[in-house]
Picture (spheres, rainbow, N blue to C red):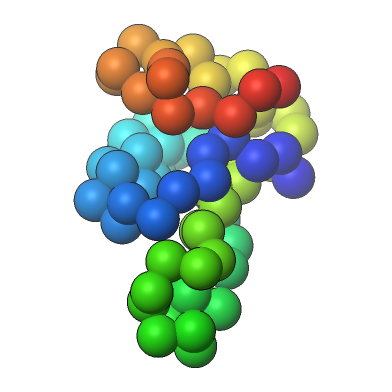
Length: 74
């Protein structure tokens, strides 16, 4: 799995996840439960992950949607 995004912004994360799912790109939000356990104080960021073979397509989609600045380096 490849990490596309790491953030505490749940709105941004939700929008990115929705775009990927609408394009039939399976994704996974890692560390969501850890964030809840620590009381949502922002100590742990959530990570948006996709399968290795979907990374290029997912990056292109999110970049075209205006999220290029939020993407982690490949």
